[in-house]
Image (tube, rainbow, N blue to C red; front, side, top):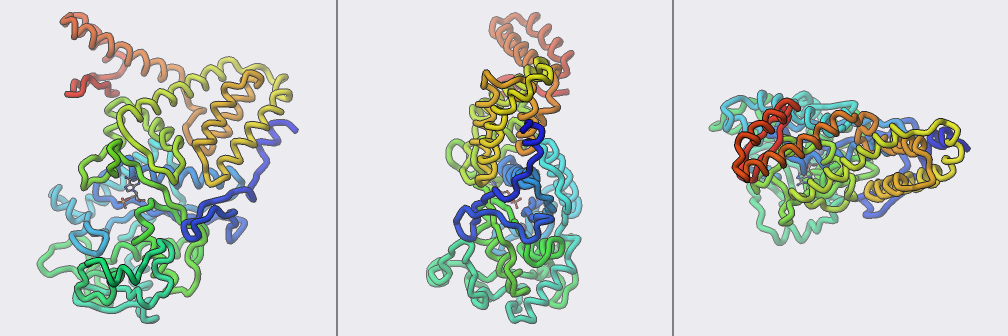
Length: 481
Ligand code: AMP
Ligand code: ZN
């Protein structure tokens, strides 16, 4: 069989995914063979997403690409949380957007717009495909109110002086996803109870406080206020994907609270299973093992990387190099190594393109091509094992028996899942980047030798190549003009 035909064969039935619900790797069977319905918990747009956050979206994008690669049509919805996420996940503290608005002396609406745009811009640089339905919490207040009313009718909701709460004791499966020891929790942990009936109860609707000025608030059957953080995902996912759908993604921190509460709300209201497959990606941590988070002040965003001359896709490459259920360690050396490997890959692409033989050899090469294709597919389909899929790709690139044209075509096929834009690699850009880097090193030598004239000359050369040099405490950095 020719490589062309093999490349076009779809292998839907082979995908297996680790389902957080069962803690097992299960064969993936969609509800409706025509279309996989997938929901991704999106960003809270109170500040620029950091690269740890972006890992969660790169992962969702890879999952979607793998499904499409296998031949499924995918409908993906993602929310934008622009109201209701409080500074503590346990319904306490200030609304994150309102806080950011106060700090930046603007409105929560402006903050939402600014950071949604920023998020979409960053996502696009990382080659994360736009989702089919991007839905904002503030555009779906009515749907959220209706869902809370449904819960109220079924006696899952109760009123307190501070809002409407979900009574988790009424939902016997509460905590199944996280394997929470709910009874232990009730007995042990000291949690601010207020008027809550159970420690795990959570807000469905919060009332605006009289002493607090909010930019975002709405009338409701219970009083003026705003929705709790979790209800938006239940309301919007069910609106766009149906009351039961196939896949729900998010970071692992969502398991014990946010997703646990989504299940309680949705299944409480409908009496049906909410989601068949729950997929969770692990964290990006700093080399010192601390999670990257704004509150710890160790945040790196895509802009920080770009300022250091790192191609955003090199960060995507770094993410592909780790299984999504494993932590990624992050540090200067680590991203430098990923950038170097990604550059090596891009150079390889150019080499293959330049030296592609004519079509005669394709048939012979395809036998070997098939071997790599099978290997690649089995890795991707086995719970999205991208590090192993990358290893297959490197093995294929180093194969001395395969023709360059087969290698090139296989590489572009693999890139449908990797999403590294390998078909867009250009000689000029690569050469400019490495030439400029070399000039920067020469300028450093000149400066160390106190040859200021030469150093200035090199700076001009670098400027002509489209870069400026920023001198920082850690040394000079290149930045595209
Ligand atoms: P948020 O904008 O806070 O709602 O979070 C957006 C996404 O980023 C969620 O899916 C989180 O699980 C995920 N996330 C938060 N911190 C990290 C981290 N350090 N590494 C990886 N994912 C993270
Ligand atoms: Zn969510």
